[in-house]
Amino acid sequence: MKNPCVLILLIALLAMSVVSEAAEVVRFAYPAKSLNYLPLILGRHKGFYRAEGIDLELIQVTSMISAKALTTGDLEFSGAQAQVLGAAAKGLPVKIIAFITIKPSFWLVAKSEIRSIADLKGKVVGTTAIGSSTDTLARYLLKKNGLVPDKEVTLFATGTTANILAAMRGGSVDAGMLSPPFHAMAKILGFRILAYVGDHVEQSLSGIGTSEKLLREKPEMVKKVLRASLKGLRFVRQNREETVQYIAKDWKVDRPLAEELYLSMIPAFSADGTMGEKGIRDTLEREREKLEIKEEIPLTRVIDLRLLKQVQKEF
Image 1: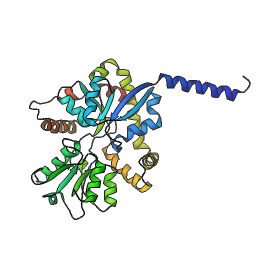
Image 2: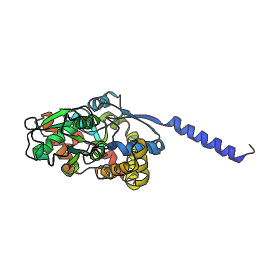
Image 3: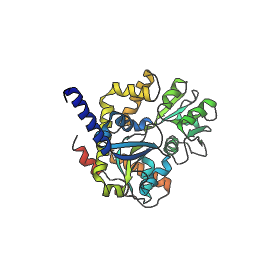
């Protein structure tokens, strides 16, 4: 071939074709398009998983069924951290293998005339669902401020955080547990932020969970997913401008709001895929109480960070 440029182009296309054919399809479930999963979503966009030979399919699945789907092989991974933790606590053969967030990115937001959590006595607080993270954390905040949930404060399940904000605007609830971008939107609309939940409790809302079977049979594939995910976490922290631009485009918000969302999420993200032991134990204890499990639950029943530690040594 006389034209070397054409030859180089053909070689490049052939190489891309080989990589594409070799990529292993991996199904990763997440409950909603939330900024809690930004490192995964942006990491996929940047090609971090593809570079590892992984064709990551992000599938929106109801969190209540994703943990069970891990054991049947219908999913390889789940990002619904609370549900994987609860399933493992009850004895299902699943494990949490990494943490994306280490603080709950929820804000308790209320009507402007409500000035404190104590003022919620006799009011209605919106959550997503009974037993969800919004429900559990709302109860925790209310109890911490001397209020009795279901007796002094009504908790009303709306289905989604978008529905919570809609209910607040419509007046059917007085306050709500909101995640990004809805907490920032509520602030713009004149609602008052009563508390950032991450200031009061450590809890992971997003991470990586999988089955014990996959850990045994495909450890190298699991390490590839972990490696790409850590790259995503690092990229979000180190590349503010590009990340803000991506939030603005993909979440369809203006630049100032995208900037605020980025800054609000950074404290919630894990630096290296791990979380402090106290936060893990406290989360597990809340889950044990919610599930009414009487015996103590060892961390080894719910968490396996051995492969993560191997991958961390590469960074």
